[in-house]
Amino acid sequence: MAIIDYSNFVYLPANSNNYTVANRPYSNVIDKVVIHVAQGSWSSAVNWFQNPYSGVTAHYTVRSSDGFVAQSIREKDIAWHAGNWYYNQTSIAIEHEGYVADPKWFTEAMYDSSARLTAYLCNKYLIPTDRAHIVGHVEVPYPNDHYDPGHYWNWEKYMDYILYYAALA
Ligand SMILES: [Zn+2]
Image 1 (cartoon, rainbow, N blue to C red):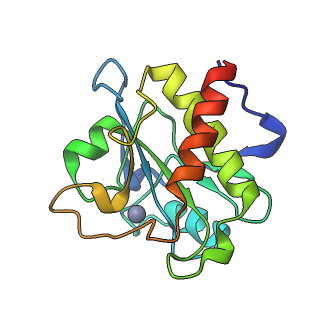
Image 2: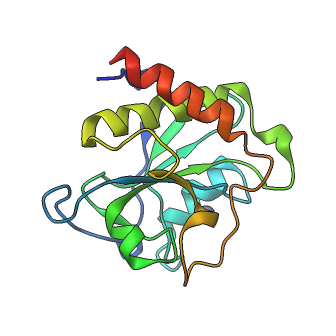
């Protein structure tokens, strides 16, 4: 199993209004990771998930400057993030600090940390490490209408890192 460095990780629970309690992977298969860009700062994303009126959350949010990871809900629970209920039920959501139109947010530290997290999730739930199962929010079908992570997201690099970390397990 890939190693998550828990010194680089904090649990900041989302408000219980913003997700569905479940018992995955027993209640629903987990076979996808959905990649998001927050259109805001790391703290604004984590705070938004804690707002009882936001109606959204992700499982994890990765910080741009250093790759620091906040977990907002447990992997067994269903995050409201994809704009598509089937995808919500069957995925883990990873938010990334920054803006789709500004690639300076997509740092080496963020790609590295996020790839380690995704590799860990793929190994844990036997999710294939390919682009059919590690998808951008933009690839989630209707009624999703979001376009993140945008064309500045470096999928080639990201998938290379995921394959590297997944193989270390
Ligand atoms: Zn998104």
